[in-house]
Length: 137
Image (cartoon, rainbow, N blue to C red; front, side):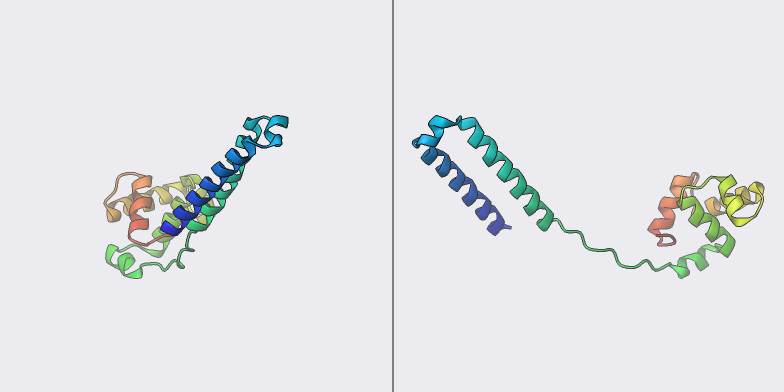
């Protein structure tokens, strides 16, 4: 990290020197100093974006592995797990019912049981807790 900072500072010092040098040359008489300042600002913007992209590369997440032990200990059935994954996808009860070919009342029952098993009161809490327990990706 210090190396990057020193390189960045060196480039800034070089740019400042270049501006001072150009100030005494005929180019500064032909063009305004503001043009050079803008060019240097653009160069540093591009350089900063490039350095930022290389320093903050994100690692690819590992493949998701479902926590079957937590599912077993909570007593979540296969159908309830299907409902939970569809809840996490943001589907409504009617959409879940259509996807699983069951009635909306059955979906409500599964959702209520999931709330009890996960000890939550809302969909968002259920999804958050399921992600914390590695039940859903």
